[in-house]
Image: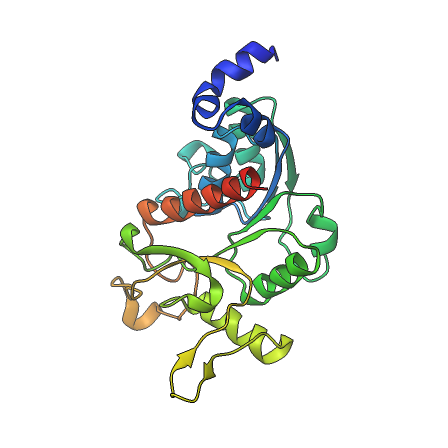
Length: 260
Protein backbone atom coordinates (compact mmCIF):
# COMPACT_ATOMS: atom_id res chain seq x y z
CA UNK A 1 0.00 0.00 0.00
CA UNK A 2 1.16 3.55 -0.76
CA UNK A 3 3.00 5.08 2.21
CA UNK A 4 0.99 8.29 1.86
CA UNK A 5 -2.26 6.33 2.32
CA UNK A 6 -0.84 4.53 5.35
CA UNK A 7 0.28 7.76 6.97
CA UNK A 8 -3.06 9.44 6.21
CA UNK A 9 -4.87 6.56 7.88
CA UNK A 10 -2.75 6.93 11.01
CA UNK A 11 -2.31 10.70 10.90
CA UNK A 12 -3.97 10.99 14.30
CA UNK A 13 -1.33 8.68 15.80
CA UNK A 14 1.49 10.65 14.14
CA UNK A 15 0.10 13.95 15.45
CA UNK A 16 -0.23 12.53 18.95
CA UNK A 17 3.08 10.68 19.32
CA UNK A 18 5.27 11.98 16.48
CA UNK A 19 6.52 10.20 13.36
CA UNK A 20 9.43 8.45 15.09
CA UNK A 21 7.13 6.88 17.67
CA UNK A 22 4.65 5.96 14.95
CA UNK A 23 7.45 4.03 13.26
CA UNK A 24 8.14 2.27 16.57
CA UNK A 25 4.54 1.08 16.59
CA UNK A 26 4.79 0.00 12.95
CA UNK A 27 7.85 -2.09 13.78
CA UNK A 28 6.35 -3.70 16.89
CA UNK A 29 4.78 -7.10 17.51
CA UNK A 30 2.15 -7.78 20.18
CA UNK A 31 0.79 -11.21 21.11
CA UNK A 32 -2.79 -11.42 22.41
CA UNK A 33 -3.78 -14.67 24.08
CA UNK A 34 -7.55 -15.09 24.23
CA UNK A 35 -9.62 -13.26 21.60
CA UNK A 36 -12.85 -12.90 23.55
CA UNK A 37 -14.57 -10.18 25.55
CA UNK A 38 -11.29 -8.50 26.51
CA UNK A 39 -8.82 -9.73 23.90
CA UNK A 40 -10.93 -8.85 20.86
CA UNK A 41 -11.07 -5.21 21.97
CA UNK A 42 -7.35 -5.17 22.72
CA UNK A 43 -6.67 -6.46 19.20
CA UNK A 44 -9.01 -3.85 17.71
CA UNK A 45 -7.31 -1.03 19.61
CA UNK A 46 -3.80 -2.13 18.64
CA UNK A 47 -4.75 -2.53 14.98
CA UNK A 48 -6.20 0.99 14.95
CA UNK A 49 -3.05 2.29 16.67
CA UNK A 50 -0.76 1.17 13.86
CA UNK A 51 0.90 -1.87 15.43
CA UNK A 52 2.77 -3.62 12.62
CA UNK A 53 2.40 -7.26 13.72
CA UNK A 54 -0.22 -9.02 15.82
CA UNK A 55 -0.41 -12.64 16.91
CA UNK A 56 -3.91 -13.82 17.89
CA UNK A 57 -4.19 -17.02 19.96
CA UNK A 58 -7.52 -18.79 20.57
CA UNK A 59 -9.29 -22.01 19.58
CA UNK A 60 -12.87 -20.93 20.29
CA UNK A 61 -15.57 -20.27 17.73
CA UNK A 62 -17.96 -17.36 18.05
CA UNK A 63 -21.19 -18.18 19.90
CA UNK A 64 -24.46 -16.27 20.07
CA UNK A 65 -23.81 -15.60 23.77
CA UNK A 66 -20.65 -13.67 22.82
CA UNK A 67 -22.56 -10.92 21.01
CA UNK A 68 -23.10 -8.80 24.13
CA UNK A 69 -19.37 -8.19 24.70
CA UNK A 70 -17.04 -9.25 21.86
CA UNK A 71 -16.24 -6.93 18.96
CA UNK A 72 -16.03 -9.66 16.29
CA UNK A 73 -19.29 -11.33 17.36
CA UNK A 74 -22.17 -10.69 14.97
CA UNK A 75 -25.12 -12.72 13.74
CA UNK A 76 -23.14 -13.26 10.53
CA UNK A 77 -20.05 -14.60 12.34
CA UNK A 78 -21.67 -17.12 14.72
CA UNK A 79 -19.89 -20.47 14.48
CA UNK A 80 -16.76 -19.04 12.86
CA UNK A 81 -13.24 -19.09 14.30
CA UNK A 82 -12.58 -16.12 16.59
CA UNK A 83 -9.01 -15.66 15.40
CA UNK A 84 -9.96 -15.90 11.72
CA UNK A 85 -12.83 -13.42 12.03
CA UNK A 86 -10.64 -11.05 14.05
CA UNK A 87 -7.85 -11.34 11.49
CA UNK A 88 -10.28 -10.49 8.68
CA UNK A 89 -11.51 -7.48 10.64
CA UNK A 90 -7.97 -6.23 11.29
CA UNK A 91 -7.15 -6.62 7.58
CA UNK A 92 -10.03 -4.24 6.83
CA UNK A 93 -8.64 -1.74 9.34
CA UNK A 94 -4.98 -2.00 8.33
CA UNK A 95 -4.15 -4.31 5.40
CA UNK A 96 -0.44 -3.78 6.08
CA UNK A 97 -0.60 -5.31 9.56
CA UNK A 98 1.12 -8.69 9.68
CA UNK A 99 -1.42 -10.97 11.34
CA UNK A 100 -0.38 -14.35 12.72
CA UNK A 101 -3.22 -16.57 13.88
CA UNK A 102 -2.78 -19.53 16.21
CA UNK A 103 -6.00 -21.53 16.23
CA UNK A 104 -5.26 -23.33 19.47
CA UNK A 105 -5.59 -22.84 23.21
CA UNK A 106 -2.37 -21.89 24.95
CA UNK A 107 -1.15 -24.85 27.00
CA UNK A 108 1.86 -25.97 28.99
CA UNK A 109 3.01 -27.89 25.92
CA UNK A 110 2.85 -25.10 23.35
CA UNK A 111 3.83 -21.88 25.14
CA UNK A 112 7.39 -21.83 23.84
CA UNK A 113 6.33 -22.57 20.26
CA UNK A 114 3.40 -20.12 20.32
CA UNK A 115 4.90 -17.04 21.98
CA UNK A 116 7.49 -15.30 19.83
CA UNK A 117 10.38 -14.32 22.11
CA UNK A 118 11.04 -11.33 19.85
CA UNK A 119 7.62 -9.82 20.52
CA UNK A 120 7.37 -6.43 22.21
CA UNK A 121 4.46 -7.21 24.51
CA UNK A 122 2.04 -9.97 25.49
CA UNK A 123 -1.55 -9.43 26.62
CA UNK A 124 -3.01 -12.31 28.65
CA UNK A 125 -6.81 -12.39 28.30
CA UNK A 126 -7.44 -16.00 29.32
CA UNK A 127 -9.33 -17.48 32.28
CA UNK A 128 -7.32 -20.64 32.99
CA UNK A 129 -5.30 -19.86 36.11
CA UNK A 130 -2.65 -22.55 35.59
CA UNK A 131 -1.95 -21.36 32.05
CA UNK A 132 -1.84 -17.74 33.23
CA UNK A 133 0.79 -18.76 35.78
CA UNK A 134 2.80 -20.64 33.14
CA UNK A 135 2.63 -17.67 30.77
CA UNK A 136 3.79 -15.32 33.53
CA UNK A 137 6.76 -17.56 34.32
CA UNK A 138 7.65 -17.87 30.63
CA UNK A 139 7.49 -14.10 30.18
CA UNK A 140 9.74 -13.48 33.18
CA UNK A 141 12.25 -16.11 32.03
CA UNK A 142 12.43 -14.53 28.56
CA UNK A 143 12.21 -10.89 29.70
CA UNK A 144 8.99 -10.30 27.76
CA UNK A 145 6.64 -7.48 28.85
CA UNK A 146 3.36 -9.06 29.95
CA UNK A 147 -0.01 -7.55 30.86
CA UNK A 148 -2.23 -9.94 32.83
CA UNK A 149 -5.97 -9.24 32.66
CA UNK A 150 -8.02 -10.29 35.66
CA UNK A 151 -11.75 -10.99 35.93
CA UNK A 152 -14.19 -9.00 33.80
CA UNK A 153 -17.19 -11.20 34.54
CA UNK A 154 -19.49 -9.98 37.29
CA UNK A 155 -18.12 -6.42 37.15
CA UNK A 156 -20.14 -3.32 36.28
CA UNK A 157 -18.17 -0.17 37.17
CA UNK A 158 -15.51 0.79 34.62
CA UNK A 159 -14.27 3.55 36.92
CA UNK A 160 -13.06 0.88 39.36
CA UNK A 161 -10.45 -0.40 36.90
CA UNK A 162 -6.90 -0.34 38.26
CA UNK A 163 -3.51 -1.44 36.99
CA UNK A 164 -0.30 -2.21 38.82
CA UNK A 165 1.70 -5.06 40.28
CA UNK A 166 -0.33 -8.23 40.75
CA UNK A 167 0.54 -8.17 44.47
CA UNK A 168 -1.77 -5.16 44.88
CA UNK A 169 -4.84 -6.60 43.12
CA UNK A 170 -8.07 -6.94 45.10
CA UNK A 171 -11.58 -8.33 44.47
CA UNK A 172 -10.27 -10.60 41.72
CA UNK A 173 -10.46 -14.39 42.12
CA UNK A 174 -8.28 -15.12 39.08
CA UNK A 175 -5.40 -12.89 40.17
CA UNK A 176 -5.74 -14.06 43.77
CA UNK A 177 -5.37 -17.71 42.72
CA UNK A 178 -2.42 -16.80 40.49
CA UNK A 179 -0.67 -15.09 43.39
CA UNK A 180 -1.22 -18.05 45.68
CA UNK A 181 0.27 -20.49 43.16
CA UNK A 182 3.25 -18.25 42.40
CA UNK A 183 4.01 -17.78 46.10
CA UNK A 184 3.37 -21.36 47.17
CA UNK A 185 5.00 -23.20 44.26
CA UNK A 186 7.52 -20.80 42.73
CA UNK A 187 8.96 -18.83 45.62
CA UNK A 188 7.44 -15.44 44.85
CA UNK A 189 7.52 -13.08 47.85
CA UNK A 190 4.57 -12.94 50.22
CA UNK A 191 3.58 -10.18 52.65
CA UNK A 192 5.95 -9.29 55.48
CA UNK A 193 4.99 -8.21 58.99
CA UNK A 194 7.61 -5.78 60.33
CA UNK A 195 8.53 -5.05 63.95
CA UNK A 196 5.70 -2.52 64.23
CA UNK A 197 3.21 -5.18 63.12
CA UNK A 198 2.56 -3.39 59.86
CA UNK A 199 2.02 -5.44 56.72
CA UNK A 200 4.38 -4.83 53.80
CA UNK A 201 3.57 -6.41 50.44
CA UNK A 202 6.60 -6.90 48.17
CA UNK A 203 6.01 -6.53 44.46
CA UNK A 204 6.04 -9.65 42.29
CA UNK A 205 7.12 -8.06 39.01
CA UNK A 206 3.95 -8.91 37.06
CA UNK A 207 1.75 -6.16 35.64
CA UNK A 208 -1.97 -6.81 36.08
CA UNK A 209 -5.32 -5.11 35.45
CA UNK A 210 -8.31 -5.61 37.72
CA UNK A 211 -11.61 -4.09 38.81
CA UNK A 212 -11.59 -3.02 42.46
CA UNK A 213 -15.23 -4.04 42.82
CA UNK A 214 -17.09 -6.94 44.41
CA UNK A 215 -18.33 -9.49 41.88
CA UNK A 216 -22.07 -9.43 41.22
CA UNK A 217 -23.56 -12.90 41.58
CA UNK A 218 -25.73 -13.95 38.59
CA UNK A 219 -29.42 -13.18 39.10
CA UNK A 220 -30.84 -15.48 36.42
CA UNK A 221 -31.16 -19.02 37.77
CA UNK A 222 -28.26 -18.49 40.15
CA UNK A 223 -29.66 -20.79 42.83
CA UNK A 224 -29.44 -23.79 40.50
CA UNK A 225 -26.85 -22.85 37.91
CA UNK A 226 -24.13 -20.79 39.63
CA UNK A 227 -20.92 -22.82 39.68
CA UNK A 228 -18.30 -20.23 40.73
CA UNK A 229 -16.84 -20.28 37.22
CA UNK A 230 -14.31 -17.45 36.89
CA UNK A 231 -15.18 -16.58 33.29
CA UNK A 232 -17.91 -14.40 31.82
CA UNK A 233 -19.85 -17.57 31.04
CA UNK A 234 -20.30 -18.12 34.78
CA UNK A 235 -20.89 -14.51 35.78
CA UNK A 236 -22.83 -11.84 33.95
CA UNK A 237 -20.94 -9.53 31.63
CA UNK A 238 -21.26 -6.24 29.78
CA UNK A 239 -19.29 -4.75 26.91
CA UNK A 240 -18.51 -1.48 28.69
CA UNK A 241 -16.46 -3.45 31.20
CA UNK A 242 -14.79 -6.00 28.89
CA UNK A 243 -13.94 -3.37 26.27
CA UNK A 244 -12.52 -1.01 28.89
CA UNK A 245 -10.21 -3.72 30.18
CA UNK A 246 -9.17 -4.54 26.61
CA UNK A 247 -8.48 -0.89 25.79
CA UNK A 248 -6.44 -0.37 28.96
CA UNK A 249 -4.39 -3.50 28.29
CA UNK A 250 -3.69 -2.23 24.77
CA UNK A 251 -2.76 1.18 26.15
CA UNK A 252 -0.23 -0.38 28.54
CA UNK A 253 1.25 -2.37 25.64
CA UNK A 254 1.57 0.83 23.59
CA UNK A 255 3.22 2.57 26.53
CA UNK A 256 5.68 -0.32 26.93
CA UNK A 257 6.64 -0.02 23.27
CA UNK A 258 6.95 3.77 23.16
CA UNK A 259 8.97 3.98 26.36
CA UNK A 260 11.37 1.22 25.36
